[in-house]
Length: 234
Image 1 (tube, one colour):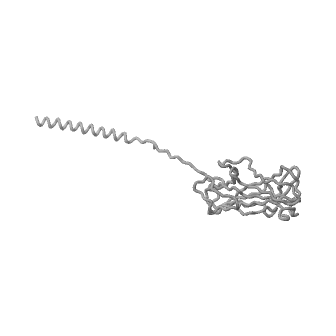
Image 2 (cartoon, rainbow, N blue to C red):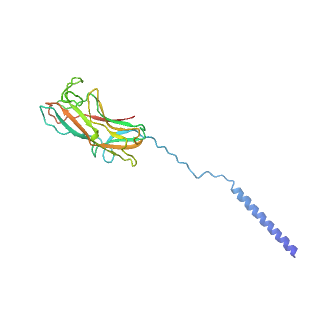
Image 3 (tube, rainbow, N blue to C red):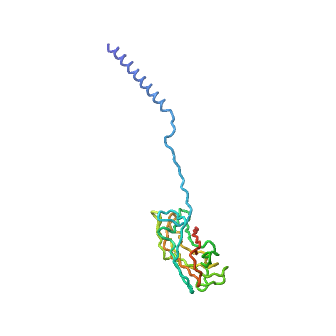
């Protein structure tokens, strides 16, 4: 009896081993299948921006038609000076350097042309003639008009724009300068040194502007002149 029982148990164990081996073979077969990766590699590029200067409002939106209204003058038999402010809370002078000028930059203000004038339907006068301290025609330019404009950025207020980590260190305001045709056609408003933020933006307000008006200049309400901001990398 014991021998018969021993044989039966041996056969049962053998069947269990065979079943286990079969399961292992099946499992091993399942593991041989190769699946595609479930991980996708997303890629992106952020390009360097463009060095730019603009006139923007408090929300950094470009002002469509920026302007500077000078003080009003009254007809005079003597030379006189009017004043104005370039750059206000609603019309900021705005410089943006999105990693485009790592060696610095220079922002300047100039007339649309060296031959530009304060234009009126009735008559004109100059912005860049230094005769008699700007009051009269010097006789060295292409016209016979007196008058001279001076721009003083040094009295303005410089501040960081939208950048959260930028500083005004190494960004300097220009000095008081008068336009002289053929000699000083452009006036520096701001300068960013090589050590200034490579990625940054700044705004300038309160730049002083003065204009000498020649004696006996004809009265008119429509005198105007176009002045243009520009910026170049160092």
